Image (cartoon, rainbow, N blue to C red; front, side):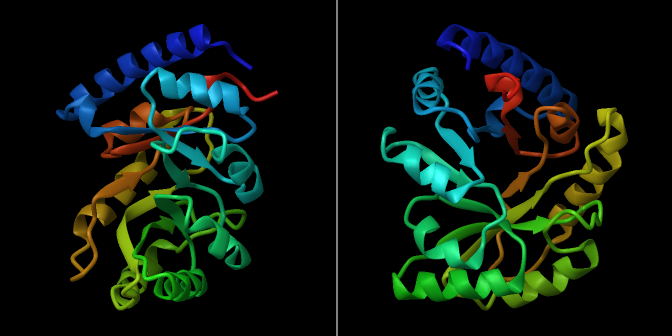
Length: 229
């Protein structure tokens, strides 16, 4: 795992790339939230990234996340970015600020019940299976509108935007149409009670294209911490 100096170098490169992508789109890089993906990344390395000014961290495995979070500063904003099983909702809600992966009405019902029980409003993003891939979770494009209409009635659930994992293609340019599609969907949502604040798309291999096409949240692991061993 990298030392602080390597993370610092990587972060500087990421900031430069974000600056270029943001200026192509005509927005400030300050409008883009970088979520550092810490799957398999040890506590001391996450701590080093936090010391460098990163405050948003994403985990996609519940048990691994909980084992690490208790050793890290309380000021960190934690994002749950993996598939959330309904039987893990109870332990995820007190710890995470934003769940990126609301991928079914069934899961929404469980989150709503748990939120109600604890008198808590849970911040979520609706996960869209933008490439209609069998291997991925999320709502198909044609299901999004009806899902949002229904979720507007879940009073302990606060939908704050959309998230997608685009198909993994060797050339990021091939992914551009998917990001563009999701951005159009994001901009066209007009459901009372639903706020389209965050568009979470783009990872280490394609984040510049995602930002150019409208992402305001990117989830970066290997670009920051190096390839996982």
